[in-house]
Image 1 (cartoon, rainbow, N blue to C red):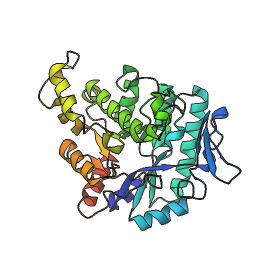
Image 2: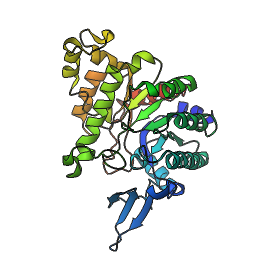
Image 3: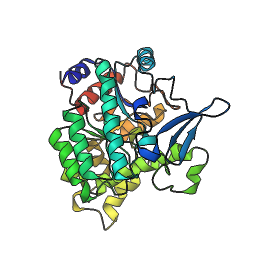
Image 4: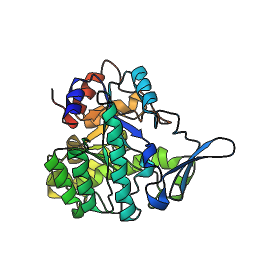
Length: 336
Protein backbone atom coordinates (compact mmCIF):
# COMPACT_ATOMS: atom_id res chain seq x y z
CA UNK A 1 0.00 0.00 0.00
CA UNK A 2 1.25 3.45 -0.91
CA UNK A 3 0.20 4.88 2.45
CA UNK A 4 2.44 2.40 4.26
CA UNK A 5 5.37 3.51 2.15
CA UNK A 6 4.65 7.11 3.16
CA UNK A 7 4.38 6.15 6.82
CA UNK A 8 7.69 4.30 6.62
CA UNK A 9 9.41 7.56 5.65
CA UNK A 10 7.71 9.78 8.26
CA UNK A 11 9.75 11.39 11.03
CA UNK A 12 6.74 11.88 13.32
CA UNK A 13 3.38 10.06 13.43
CA UNK A 14 0.37 11.10 15.50
CA UNK A 15 -2.01 8.18 16.14
CA UNK A 16 -4.56 10.10 18.26
CA UNK A 17 -6.31 12.50 15.90
CA UNK A 18 -10.09 12.46 15.64
CA UNK A 19 -12.01 13.72 12.63
CA UNK A 20 -15.56 15.00 12.12
CA UNK A 21 -16.80 14.49 8.57
CA UNK A 22 -19.30 16.77 6.88
CA UNK A 23 -20.50 13.81 4.80
CA UNK A 24 -21.34 11.87 7.98
CA UNK A 25 -23.92 14.37 9.21
CA UNK A 26 -27.44 12.97 9.47
CA UNK A 27 -26.63 9.47 8.27
CA UNK A 28 -27.42 7.62 11.53
CA UNK A 29 -31.17 8.14 11.20
CA UNK A 30 -32.82 9.91 14.13
CA UNK A 31 -29.50 9.81 15.99
CA UNK A 32 -27.86 12.39 13.71
CA UNK A 33 -25.13 13.44 14.05
CA UNK A 34 -26.07 17.07 13.64
CA UNK A 35 -24.34 20.44 13.95
CA UNK A 36 -26.18 23.65 14.79
CA UNK A 37 -25.80 27.06 16.41
CA UNK A 38 -27.49 28.77 19.34
CA UNK A 39 -28.93 32.28 19.11
CA UNK A 40 -25.69 33.75 20.40
CA UNK A 41 -23.70 31.95 17.68
CA UNK A 42 -22.16 29.30 19.89
CA UNK A 43 -22.12 25.88 18.23
CA UNK A 44 -23.65 22.61 19.36
CA UNK A 45 -23.16 19.02 18.23
CA UNK A 46 -25.97 16.50 18.68
CA UNK A 47 -25.84 12.71 18.72
CA UNK A 48 -29.17 11.16 19.67
CA UNK A 49 -30.39 12.90 22.82
CA UNK A 50 -26.88 13.99 23.80
CA UNK A 51 -25.83 17.53 22.94
CA UNK A 52 -22.35 18.98 23.25
CA UNK A 53 -22.33 22.77 23.52
CA UNK A 54 -19.54 25.20 22.81
CA UNK A 55 -17.17 23.02 20.78
CA UNK A 56 -16.63 24.31 17.24
CA UNK A 57 -16.04 21.66 14.60
CA UNK A 58 -16.90 23.62 11.47
CA UNK A 59 -14.23 26.09 10.42
CA UNK A 60 -11.51 24.25 12.35
CA UNK A 61 -9.06 21.39 11.83
CA UNK A 62 -11.61 18.75 12.86
CA UNK A 63 -13.58 19.33 9.65
CA UNK A 64 -11.38 21.51 7.43
CA UNK A 65 -8.54 19.32 6.18
CA UNK A 66 -6.51 22.23 4.85
CA UNK A 67 -6.52 23.81 8.31
CA UNK A 68 -5.51 20.43 9.77
CA UNK A 69 -2.55 20.19 7.40
CA UNK A 70 -1.48 23.73 8.22
CA UNK A 71 -1.66 23.00 11.97
CA UNK A 72 0.20 19.71 11.55
CA UNK A 73 3.01 21.54 9.77
CA UNK A 74 3.30 24.06 12.62
CA UNK A 75 3.36 21.23 15.16
CA UNK A 76 6.02 19.29 13.27
CA UNK A 77 3.79 16.28 12.58
CA UNK A 78 4.53 14.45 9.32
CA UNK A 79 1.66 11.98 9.33
CA UNK A 80 -1.63 11.69 11.18
CA UNK A 81 -3.83 8.63 11.61
CA UNK A 82 -7.40 9.93 11.56
CA UNK A 83 -9.97 8.19 13.74
CA UNK A 84 -13.73 8.43 14.37
CA UNK A 85 -15.04 11.04 16.77
CA UNK A 86 -15.81 9.23 20.08
CA UNK A 87 -19.07 11.19 20.29
CA UNK A 88 -20.37 9.30 17.27
CA UNK A 89 -19.33 5.68 17.77
CA UNK A 90 -23.06 4.82 17.87
CA UNK A 91 -22.30 1.47 19.54
CA UNK A 92 -25.75 1.24 21.18
CA UNK A 93 -28.16 2.37 18.46
CA UNK A 94 -30.14 0.11 16.14
CA UNK A 95 -27.99 -2.25 14.09
CA UNK A 96 -29.30 -0.95 10.78
CA UNK A 97 -28.53 2.71 11.57
CA UNK A 98 -25.08 1.85 12.95
CA UNK A 99 -24.17 -0.22 9.89
CA UNK A 100 -25.23 2.53 7.48
CA UNK A 101 -23.36 5.15 9.50
CA UNK A 102 -20.10 3.19 9.61
CA UNK A 103 -20.19 2.37 5.90
CA UNK A 104 -20.78 5.96 4.85
CA UNK A 105 -18.39 7.39 7.46
CA UNK A 106 -15.54 5.12 6.39
CA UNK A 107 -16.13 5.80 2.69
CA UNK A 108 -16.12 9.56 3.34
CA UNK A 109 -12.93 9.24 5.38
CA UNK A 110 -11.23 7.23 2.64
CA UNK A 111 -12.17 9.91 0.12
CA UNK A 112 -10.44 12.61 2.19
CA UNK A 113 -7.38 10.42 2.69
CA UNK A 114 -7.07 9.90 -1.05
CA UNK A 115 -6.54 13.65 -1.44
CA UNK A 116 -3.68 13.75 1.09
CA UNK A 117 -1.88 10.39 0.84
CA UNK A 118 1.44 11.89 1.93
CA UNK A 119 0.05 13.26 5.18
CA UNK A 120 -2.99 11.33 6.35
CA UNK A 121 -4.12 7.76 6.94
CA UNK A 122 -7.17 6.44 8.76
CA UNK A 123 -8.90 3.88 10.95
CA UNK A 124 -12.37 2.41 10.47
CA UNK A 125 -15.50 2.88 12.56
CA UNK A 126 -17.21 -0.44 13.28
CA UNK A 127 -20.84 -1.28 14.20
CA UNK A 128 -19.97 -3.20 17.36
CA UNK A 129 -23.57 -4.07 18.22
CA UNK A 130 -23.43 -6.57 15.35
CA UNK A 131 -20.11 -8.44 15.31
CA UNK A 132 -20.75 -10.08 11.94
CA UNK A 133 -21.39 -6.68 10.38
CA UNK A 134 -18.33 -5.27 12.18
CA UNK A 135 -16.15 -7.97 10.59
CA UNK A 136 -17.63 -7.26 7.17
CA UNK A 137 -16.98 -3.54 7.56
CA UNK A 138 -13.45 -4.16 8.79
CA UNK A 139 -12.78 -6.27 5.70
CA UNK A 140 -14.24 -3.66 3.35
CA UNK A 141 -12.45 -0.79 5.07
CA UNK A 142 -9.04 -2.47 5.01
CA UNK A 143 -9.14 -4.30 1.70
CA UNK A 144 -11.26 -1.91 -0.39
CA UNK A 145 -10.90 1.51 1.24
CA UNK A 146 -7.26 1.27 2.33
CA UNK A 147 -7.79 2.02 6.03
CA UNK A 148 -5.13 0.71 8.40
CA UNK A 149 -7.21 -0.93 11.11
CA UNK A 150 -10.21 -0.31 13.35
CA UNK A 151 -11.18 2.14 16.07
CA UNK A 152 -13.82 1.35 18.70
CA UNK A 153 -15.01 2.42 22.14
CA UNK A 154 -14.43 0.68 25.44
CA UNK A 155 -18.13 -0.05 25.98
CA UNK A 156 -20.56 -1.60 23.49
CA UNK A 157 -22.66 -3.87 25.65
CA UNK A 158 -20.36 -6.89 25.97
CA UNK A 159 -17.01 -7.25 27.68
CA UNK A 160 -13.79 -7.13 25.71
CA UNK A 161 -13.02 -10.70 26.80
CA UNK A 162 -16.41 -12.04 25.71
CA UNK A 163 -16.04 -15.05 23.42
CA UNK A 164 -18.49 -13.45 20.99
CA UNK A 165 -15.63 -11.11 20.04
CA UNK A 166 -13.31 -13.97 19.09
CA UNK A 167 -14.30 -13.87 15.39
CA UNK A 168 -13.48 -10.15 15.26
CA UNK A 169 -10.15 -10.65 16.97
CA UNK A 170 -9.40 -13.51 14.57
CA UNK A 171 -10.27 -11.28 11.61
CA UNK A 172 -7.91 -8.54 12.84
CA UNK A 173 -5.11 -11.10 13.14
CA UNK A 174 -5.90 -12.60 9.72
CA UNK A 175 -5.89 -9.17 8.05
CA UNK A 176 -2.78 -8.22 10.04
CA UNK A 177 -4.16 -4.86 11.24
CA UNK A 178 -4.33 -3.27 14.71
CA UNK A 179 -7.32 -2.39 16.87
CA UNK A 180 -7.43 0.99 18.63
CA UNK A 181 -9.66 1.44 21.69
CA UNK A 182 -10.73 4.86 23.04
CA UNK A 183 -13.63 5.64 25.44
CA UNK A 184 -16.72 7.67 24.69
CA UNK A 185 -18.33 9.97 27.27
CA UNK A 186 -20.75 8.00 29.43
CA UNK A 187 -24.41 8.41 28.54
CA UNK A 188 -24.17 9.34 24.88
CA UNK A 189 -25.92 6.22 23.62
CA UNK A 190 -25.08 3.71 26.35
CA UNK A 191 -25.18 3.66 30.15
CA UNK A 192 -24.86 6.98 31.96
CA UNK A 193 -22.75 5.46 34.74
CA UNK A 194 -22.08 7.25 38.02
CA UNK A 195 -24.13 10.45 38.25
CA UNK A 196 -21.02 12.36 39.40
CA UNK A 197 -19.73 12.00 35.83
CA UNK A 198 -22.40 14.52 34.81
CA UNK A 199 -20.60 17.48 36.47
CA UNK A 200 -17.23 19.20 36.07
CA UNK A 201 -16.56 17.27 32.82
CA UNK A 202 -15.70 14.27 34.99
CA UNK A 203 -16.89 11.92 32.26
CA UNK A 204 -13.89 13.14 30.28
CA UNK A 205 -11.43 13.92 33.07
CA UNK A 206 -11.82 10.78 35.18
CA UNK A 207 -14.33 8.61 33.33
CA UNK A 208 -12.03 8.03 30.38
CA UNK A 209 -9.15 7.00 32.64
CA UNK A 210 -11.37 4.52 34.47
CA UNK A 211 -12.74 3.04 31.24
CA UNK A 212 -9.25 2.63 29.82
CA UNK A 213 -7.96 0.92 32.97
CA UNK A 214 -11.00 -1.38 32.89
CA UNK A 215 -10.31 -2.21 29.25
CA UNK A 216 -6.68 -3.10 29.96
CA UNK A 217 -7.57 -5.24 32.98
CA UNK A 218 -10.35 -7.01 31.08
CA UNK A 219 -8.09 -7.85 28.16
CA UNK A 220 -5.36 -9.21 30.46
CA UNK A 221 -7.39 -10.99 33.13
CA UNK A 222 -9.86 -12.17 30.48
CA UNK A 223 -7.16 -14.02 28.55
CA UNK A 224 -7.62 -12.18 25.25
CA UNK A 225 -3.89 -11.65 24.84
CA UNK A 226 -3.24 -15.31 25.54
CA UNK A 227 -5.85 -16.48 23.01
CA UNK A 228 -4.61 -14.05 20.34
CA UNK A 229 -0.88 -13.51 20.94
CA UNK A 230 -0.34 -11.74 17.61
CA UNK A 231 -3.27 -9.34 18.06
CA UNK A 232 -2.12 -5.73 18.44
CA UNK A 233 -4.39 -3.49 20.53
CA UNK A 234 -3.58 0.15 21.30
CA UNK A 235 -5.27 1.87 24.26
CA UNK A 236 -5.60 5.66 24.42
CA UNK A 237 -4.16 7.96 27.10
CA UNK A 238 -1.50 5.43 28.15
CA UNK A 239 -4.18 3.12 29.48
CA UNK A 240 -5.80 5.74 31.69
CA UNK A 241 -5.22 4.97 35.37
CA UNK A 242 -3.67 1.55 34.87
CA UNK A 243 -0.06 2.61 35.54
CA UNK A 244 -1.01 3.97 38.96
CA UNK A 245 -2.91 0.75 39.73
CA UNK A 246 -0.24 -1.70 38.63
CA UNK A 247 0.83 -2.66 42.16
CA UNK A 248 -2.73 -3.53 43.12
CA UNK A 249 -3.27 -5.44 39.88
CA UNK A 250 0.00 -7.35 40.33
CA UNK A 251 -1.11 -8.26 43.85
CA UNK A 252 -4.41 -9.60 42.55
CA UNK A 253 -2.49 -12.08 40.40
CA UNK A 254 -1.05 -13.62 43.56
CA UNK A 255 -4.09 -13.41 45.84
CA UNK A 256 -7.40 -13.65 43.98
CA UNK A 257 -8.94 -17.07 43.25
CA UNK A 258 -10.33 -16.21 39.80
CA UNK A 259 -6.96 -15.30 38.29
CA UNK A 260 -6.05 -17.64 35.39
CA UNK A 261 -3.10 -19.94 35.90
CA UNK A 262 -0.96 -18.11 33.35
CA UNK A 263 -1.04 -14.98 35.54
CA UNK A 264 -0.34 -16.55 38.94
CA UNK A 265 3.20 -15.26 39.39
CA UNK A 266 5.06 -12.16 40.58
CA UNK A 267 4.40 -9.00 38.53
CA UNK A 268 2.30 -11.01 36.08
CA UNK A 269 -0.06 -8.14 35.28
CA UNK A 270 2.81 -5.72 34.75
CA UNK A 271 4.55 -8.13 32.39
CA UNK A 272 1.34 -8.58 30.40
CA UNK A 273 1.24 -4.84 29.71
CA UNK A 274 4.13 -5.41 27.28
CA UNK A 275 1.67 -7.19 24.99
CA UNK A 276 -0.44 -4.04 24.56
CA UNK A 277 0.25 -0.69 22.92
CA UNK A 278 -0.49 2.74 24.40
CA UNK A 279 -0.49 6.30 23.14
CA UNK A 280 1.31 9.05 25.07
CA UNK A 281 -1.53 11.56 25.47
CA UNK A 282 -1.00 12.10 29.22
CA UNK A 283 -0.23 15.85 29.52
CA UNK A 284 2.54 15.63 32.10
CA UNK A 285 6.16 14.54 31.89
CA UNK A 286 5.93 13.05 35.41
CA UNK A 287 3.10 10.80 34.26
CA UNK A 288 5.02 9.87 31.14
CA UNK A 289 7.99 8.91 33.34
CA UNK A 290 5.68 6.63 35.34
CA UNK A 291 4.39 5.09 32.10
CA UNK A 292 7.97 4.47 30.96
CA UNK A 293 8.77 2.77 34.25
CA UNK A 294 5.65 0.57 34.25
CA UNK A 295 5.02 -0.14 30.56
CA UNK A 296 8.47 0.30 29.09
CA UNK A 297 8.99 2.24 25.88
CA UNK A 298 8.79 -0.36 23.11
CA UNK A 299 5.03 -0.10 22.62
CA UNK A 300 4.37 3.60 23.17
CA UNK A 301 3.21 5.75 20.26
CA UNK A 302 2.65 9.47 20.06
CA UNK A 303 -0.89 10.74 20.53
CA UNK A 304 -1.97 14.38 20.75
CA UNK A 305 -5.80 14.48 20.53
CA UNK A 306 -5.10 16.91 17.75
CA UNK A 307 -7.17 20.10 17.81
CA UNK A 308 -9.11 18.88 20.84
CA UNK A 309 -9.60 20.97 23.95
CA UNK A 310 -6.77 19.03 25.59
CA UNK A 311 -4.40 18.86 22.66
CA UNK A 312 -0.74 18.78 23.51
CA UNK A 313 2.53 18.06 21.74
CA UNK A 314 4.01 15.83 24.44
CA UNK A 315 6.42 13.41 22.84
CA UNK A 316 7.43 15.62 19.91
CA UNK A 317 10.99 16.15 21.05
CA UNK A 318 14.40 14.89 20.08
CA UNK A 319 14.58 12.41 22.97
CA UNK A 320 11.37 10.51 22.28
CA UNK A 321 10.21 11.40 18.77
CA UNK A 322 12.28 8.82 16.91
CA UNK A 323 11.35 6.03 19.33
CA UNK A 324 7.61 6.76 19.23
CA UNK A 325 7.71 7.07 15.45
CA UNK A 326 9.48 3.76 14.93
CA UNK A 327 7.02 2.13 17.32
CA UNK A 328 4.09 3.56 15.34
CA UNK A 329 5.52 2.18 12.12
CA UNK A 330 5.62 -1.30 13.65
CA UNK A 331 2.09 -0.99 15.01
CA UNK A 332 0.73 0.22 11.67
CA UNK A 333 2.68 -2.32 9.58
CA UNK A 334 4.74 0.34 7.82
CA UNK A 335 8.08 -1.27 7.00
CA UNK A 336 10.85 0.54 5.14
